[in-house]
Length: 212
Image (cartoon, rainbow, N blue to C red; front, side, top):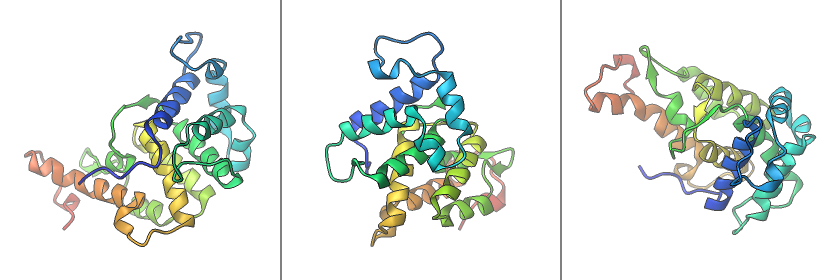
């Protein structure tokens, strides 16, 4: 199945990667890093990880750097705009992607990683995944998304994740008439496709993992 149509453009994806990378640097501030991001460090990252809700996150200067950069690079009506709603959404997004240690630079969704069988079971249980899919309250999503990143080994594509989470929140407020075009649909497809992919490669997959 084709990847979901992105809400963020390529410049916004690049900005997310730069922001995420800046938070993980110690003293090495690459010349390729945007000037305004060079003051970010592990201290900013630690504060973001301690922030327990959207209001705490909005109070962090690092979040405003992410948000302002995304808004400046806005090219169409789907992208984040300079509004209270989008600042709040993106603050939650920042609070999740900061939990990622390794940016995989892959278009695969976090849903795909959560459905990957390890040791005979998926990274995230089906019960937990269904709960995540059914949740619409933003602050609860922040908690569940953070948990999902941890279960996935803190490895995923940060640009794809940021795009997905922002769009997920937008779709909660503005449901699409066609559910097949939503982020949750694509995550579910990727989650349940993993055992089939392993089976098609001739790898051992527990029978219970194969979803009819």
